[in-house]
View 1 (cartoon, rainbow, N blue to C red):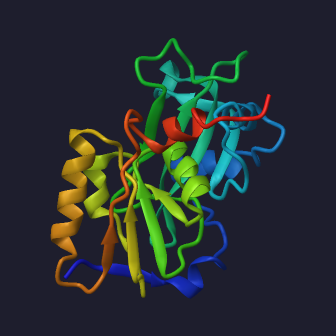
View 2: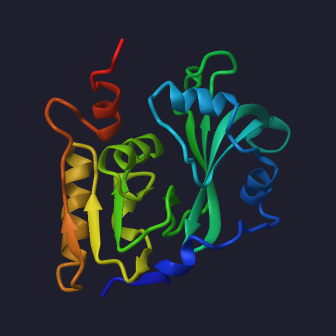
Length: 219
């Protein structure tokens, strides 16, 4: 039977963890994102607060040692149960409210995520899982349930879920990786009593962030 973690009732009342590892040091010196380029980036994708476990750092390290440079980034805490085990960095353009376009992949992990996820809202008896942070935020707004970002479909089946969870909603991208993650999770929980639902983004959209961005809006 898949393992689950801290009781849901305790998750919403835990303090941030202070530590000495590289990931925690970056987290500790990062700022709330209100009024920062990170807020502008998320707002540009129609993503609204609250932004739990998200921060902004104008001088986020990229690289190691003397080769390291420091750039602005959206910082996300990756928690396994209640512990911060890593951070996820989305490097931002220093001028525009966009992801950095001079990097092959502006999204990078620092630390070992283990079975952690970006816990964007406290779980209740229901929890959604999505792949990326932006997609999880969009899905949370559209479905009005707490959603965690697994940071990759290949990691989804290994995320440590809260105990007492009754319903799991899989909000993966409409692609081969999303279908595979859906099958793996359903197989893992087929005898646990956990209800698993899989609403897919409506065609032609690939993910829930795309659905949100293309919704009709008043002029």
